[in-house]
Length: 301
Image (cartoon, rainbow, N blue to C red; front, top):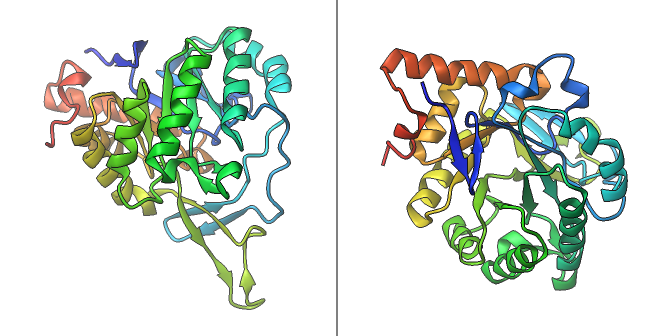
């Protein structure tokens, strides 16, 4: 049985990775699971300089999922390279580092630093970050801005680029095509949906930032729709994510057109979720006599 997939010229042993921000850089989860079994590990977002993140409370449980408004808190590229890269290098899997920034120059700077340090296989570009030079509108909400930032990052690194798209747009396929035109080697979708929760007793928003990103099973139908639409619009590989809890969920995304999938919110309820999803994919293939995972990609079209 062949589980290997090609994402932007990088071979993964299987199509399962972690969603950015849900296992940090893996250290905290390493006593519960073997990251070497995964096709890749995707880290939390890394900026060129330390970010403090948003005010607390930052997380709230919702029906069928959770809201988070962490604000991409991270110690910055220098600390990440010193403390996390050695751990990641020792893992027998593909290393993907998610990068973030407030300007295109921020993205370029962190991409260059991670390229030079070695040990990183791919970069995932979080274009859902607000572009401070353009009034705070997310890069991912404008095809032109998406194309420009991907173009600049491609010039700054020789690592394959995965552009992570936001569902908070009118036409996600249009943004996907802009990223592809700029040279993105693959796409991740979707990032969280914008949502909020109100405490009816205090009559105030629960999150310190008022609004946050909704993730978990509640967003799966939206994520699946996005993957299906984007698969028809682009030729580059898609990493599908959004509410994947089981192997069956993962198979749905692959049938919709995802070459690989990422497990996110499930990691908070079960630290072995990614391994369980991988085992579920294998069980499905055995049950239906599928010898190559690539036979299933986009099969629902």
